[in-house]
Length: 498
Image 1 (cartoon, rainbow, N blue to C red):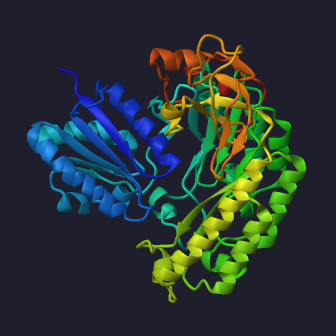
Image 2 (image 1 turned 30 degrees about the horizontal axis):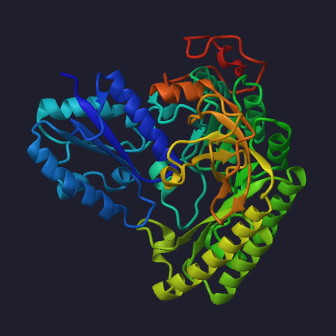
Image 3 (image 1 turned 120 degrees about the vertical axis):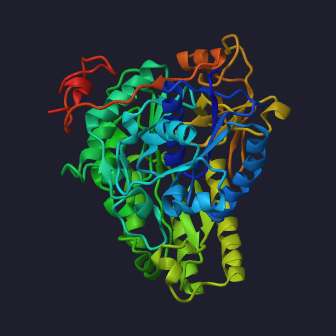
């Protein structure tokens, strides 16, 4: 009988994308996705070590799975991701019912490790110190029919004192441009309309093969992919962000005017302690140049409150930068020590009650700014890529939800003479904003236009893309490709090799 699997993912977009690769490998090995409500034969936990209480969440899940495994002989449990890379064999010591532990550098090993664990009737722990296979050379079962993740690099060369990612993901490794564009084209060939380019620091892309303008070139190259309607990327680093990227964003029609630019702190003294190699003046200068080139750009950010040694004056400087930056939204975090990071050992850890009070003030300020910025859009017409599951109250309100080109979430009424049969996730609509809230917009009038898409057809049919791994050529950018995507092609396949 065919064995079934389920993957539970924690953490960042990179982990979500890694889970797509894990699913692709399992299906290539003969496994099938477990149906809703079905107890799978294999449960994979793809973990995060960055978020607070990551250890407690993992072992809590493993505790629940222990009973399920006892009730279902032959069930296997695998733990991968950043926490597995960090804790290694400690996981099977604390949870001996776990069958497989694998790290961030060897996700390709999962099917073999599961088979070996069954054959040997003992846990298999395999953690590598360096990348074995670039994840994007592996097959992937995609979660979305209309939007796809495309990794352009893995790892990070920065040394931020609060971050454990470099020690778990390793030094930055860049994919060849031809491989990236071949994967983008493979997704578009399956009906995908939007791609998000992923990296721990996307705008340092090209450092490995010596081209500091490679990321801007990559954005422009995505503009030539026929059928690709939206390009996004996350996340850049202010220290490495260059004007050629701004120019590429402004001049490439399918690159969305959305930018996630992590601030972390508005205090130069705290930024120095964080080893963030930029200062607030440079950060605000980037935002100014982005808005000069793209007045409609929506800029979001990350901010950490209560970093060790942060004073009230430091925090006030953060609030001042937030007021000046006018972010459309912000991901705000209360600092908590991460074992293995330099910041965890720093003196002057800020008391929890002080961190909470500052956090509340920051959230209140940013919510007010977000609301003000969203109100400016009332009465404007926006293009939405209709999404699945974005609005928790959509059923109650008889609305659907979608993302505008600038990334804002819009809840809309799917009615009007422009509607062609019915609107599906993956379709494109235009609608007029009637109401603004801090975290979303509402469009309660009839839609202005509706375009049915192949992505919408696939959603309606219950189909999701499955892409083969792509490995082509040498790094460079070149003319529009002529070779078929996914073929075992020579150096010119993907149109980006020397």
